[in-house]
Length: 387
Image 1 (cartoon, rainbow, N blue to C red):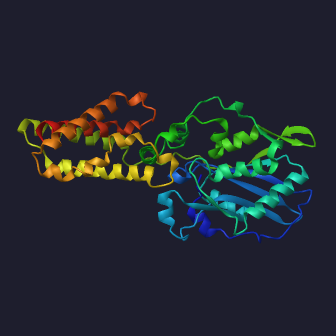
Image 2 (image 1 turned 120 degrees about the vertical axis):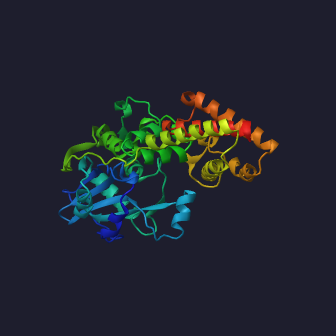
Image 3 (image 1 turned 90 degrees about the vertical axis):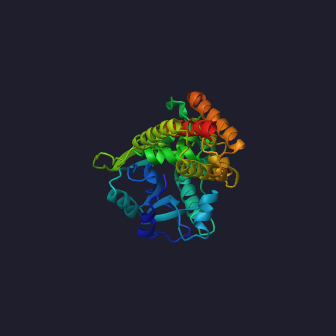
């Protein structure tokens, strides 16, 4: 969904805004959909843009809502706080397409069936939106991204003339499940997203919300209608490929998370057996392990309570990555401590119940975390008995 930042640095702005232009009868407005990029998480969902073409006025622009600028004030702080600003960029359409051709990502075009008045209204809206004082918007992963913005342009301009028929969507996916579909070849990225984002991602998505994904945006336009002079017509007049990519096998992670997580569980169980036989805790391991879990939990709690990332709230991953581990961090080195045994026995009970109820929780936890949670339960039980 998010555009490659390299594109932004390479492309040159194509339009001078603020000039009123009357489109000719030959003008066309299209939805441009770009294929997924398998190399990075941010390119795994594809991309959407709007094309305005008018050979008479020598207009051939791509309106791209997926632009962000690292140089904006407090970029990293705003990103962390969920206040990241994206903006509408306007580019020469051939340059826009060539950037995706370079990365072997397919491009398709849906030419829309609009009246001359509707075309002019959409163009005027885009030109107004591209003015420096209007070009930025508050980005949201699922509800205000580059695909949502394309949909919203037409919903805002055409109003009741446009009708989206979502009956072609027969699945009842949650937002998390929709995201998972696009990250099957990127298990590490999928794992990171599932850890950081909480219960709001497990909301059942209605058909209108599916359009946060460019593929579903394009399909929704295929099934939409438009009112022109009182006559209902298909919104898409013509759909055609712009660039057909060369099929390639997606890159695979050098080390799959299952190997890492499974290996870590085997190490933890082996260490627990050794510690139980010698009746002595491996303090070094618990300091590293529970210290890391406490840091992860603190991050998750911060994302929930101290940022505007709505999708990061009510995160059930806090049941295994507990920020309270940092509070007892010093006690691990000062054993024996009566509170320590009670604390870790409580942790063992919570994480064991978490494993037992894994498939019935309201939040879908990533199955790659099962070995990690099992490791937490194992070490917590050991510290509860021998600590």
